[in-house]
Image (cartoon, rainbow over all chains, first blue to last red; front, top):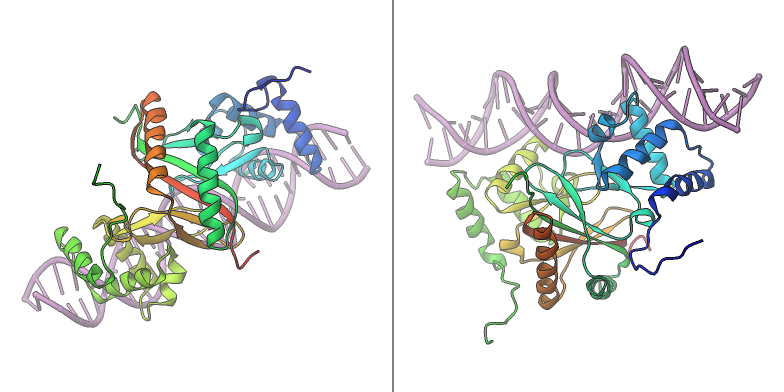
Length: 155
Length: 155
DNA sequence: ATGAGTGCAAAGGCTTTGCATTAGG
DNA sequence: CCTAATGCAAAGCCTTTGCACTCAT
């Protein structure tokens, strides 16, 4: 079992299937073909996908099944629902798999991609946020950070 | 450098009405009673409100008028639509009026409140984000930062 | 008068759900 | 076999829109 020293710990591509199967099993769910297609679609994209985008890459999957399976995968802790604008919801693999990261959102076309900032800044940020949150009686679970701007294609 | 003072510039409460009226006038819109009620509601709340919350404090305003007026106020640059979870959209006065800030979102009940972090951190953050964004071909317009956690009431 | 603003109800668009069918263990 | 999973279509829910009425200019 090879161990890595990267701070961006994440599940290796080849192990994602196994990881997902395990997480699903933990909540008594099966790793069906539909779910496999969705996970593979998200794995290949390496960025949050909307339902329409997911359906484009999963032949024969009904829209309702996509929604239902994404909910199951979300409950299993494998997929996260990303809220960017008010259009479509987007889904991505959890940080367990992808590592901690943030998003760039194109305010023109809605494209979303991943970005990472230095660990040092993440820690500073967490410290500052936890402080101001607790001052207001909040218990911080995590933070969410997005870059809003114009993507390469829209520029 | 002597000009590093706090950048929390905002419109004084008493001047909000005038500011809003001006901004509306700039796009050829009137400051009607419905719009006034909404602005006063948002001013009093000092946090992003959902449509149901706004309707509770604006007697006699139709839901459709609330949506329509909020769109107008948004176009006038007076109100901003805040996307937190996938439930209801929330609205708040723009940063012109409220100053730059971020949000705390309760993942249990959906409550949203404002938070501010030190200017120094804002600047570091902007620098780091602009850098990673441009590396991906994005032109950053601004950033969005939320604390997700459990609020005082839900704890 | 005359067009903006409003209320009410209907329509839209994304998401969820009911139900009969199919498939995996 | 037996229950979970799926497809299809209908229903839900927030939001937007059409239309007639009202109000301010």
